[in-house]
Length: 199
Image (cartoon, rainbow, N blue to C red):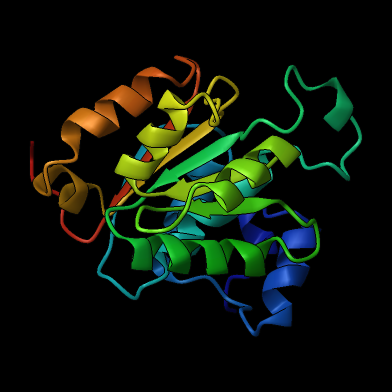
């Protein structure tokens, strides 16, 4: 019998959202990662590109945040401040992660914002002012928005470094470290990558 997402402890709204785009059975990395990550445990996940890494962390982080339609949303310390942050080395990857998160949260309607350089700030800053649940972006632009006081990371519960090795290779380490320092010590940290050097 093939495993389903419900077997992994995924909430019905997410199972329904995934089924609506034809995703019924988890890939191995998802079967291994989701039960650990939904409990808030820090984790390193390694799997080849194209094996479902994005949903391995995406399904988990969506389950760990509160969205505006949930009871208790208004009681959050800062409603509208992002509760999850996904850092990616490239704009292309950030956009792909956002698409997968949008698919997985189409029933619960998490507000996901993608931020990257090379485009104007206005839309990104206006959206942050309106309120978002998840921010996906590249380190440089994320740091710019933090410096401009447009992005508040003090409510982040889940921090994901996607293609972590590539980000550290590309010289993003100082930016990544500065961004991490703006998030709460109590956050969950998930590192996902196709290759994971010992360092």
